[in-house]
Image (cartoon, rainbow, N blue to C red; front, side, top):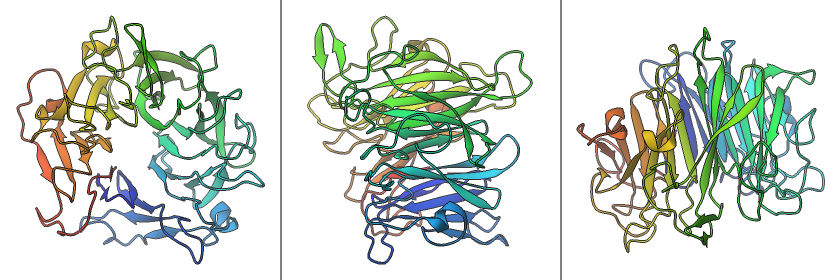
Length: 421
């Protein structure tokens, strides 16, 4: 069964298949403020946590494996990013980002924990064959994504050839190496000849990640992946004028053998591709990402491979930081199937300043969930858009709106919709 978890600003939850992992990266452990923790809640017919399988809490210095061997410290932010699912081998897994973890003398270098097969292991840039080097403030684990085939872990504050916060990421397979950790396949940054653009200060390449299983024509299964990488700090040249922090997204095909090729570079109003919108300074296109294969057992097509891009700082007319969401196919030309969603066009209501629509987004097989944590009321909201509403053509199906105090939800709280998975 599929469960959806939604949280206010102090929480970053994820739900996949028959379990939900709810993380509070701002939780304190003893005197360690913002050390973080994760709760794993198993699904059951009566609801999360009602079945025979015992729910699990992950907190540093408890349990087993690498998490037990790790010490909770102020600012570790364990659970700031999460991904969960089942590998192609049928093994349930959980990936826990801990971007504030210090490694040796490198404060906030960051790491991730891979939980599977009854235990857990740490993954960071000082482990076997992991590209990159442990440095202070890298933030490795600030973003994570995973599907049945691959895992991606971002270090958006990584320095690349002296350019601070240029960012990078590492892609792994679920197959364990000689250290019993996920096997590193390759790293990506914008100073590679195989990646478009160039690493620049503040790009934050890898700040958002999404993965979806891909079945190419001629393959018996969806044993490849399409990877989307957000670069919300990317500056773009628009009509000869440099627009700071406009943002962009790059997509890559990752094969079953662990090789990759770049597919597309996307931004609002991309010239020559008939993409909707206009790139403007401070949009931060690519702050959030979500991707889905709606028919994983079939050969993948433009219609079945979907990606949504959050643009929470998008100005709509004179309304600053109203926010928007841009939906694309992961295959084919970016402008052939893109759909622009904003308040008043796909989302009920009028745009409001500071609402930051698209701060959280999540695809299921039937809906796109879009968070608006700072509007239209002080409590925030989450919108469930039927899949038909985020394809070409005019929306026809009703949008379901969740907000505190309605539909059985408790009335208290703020920033509802800050995170949805």
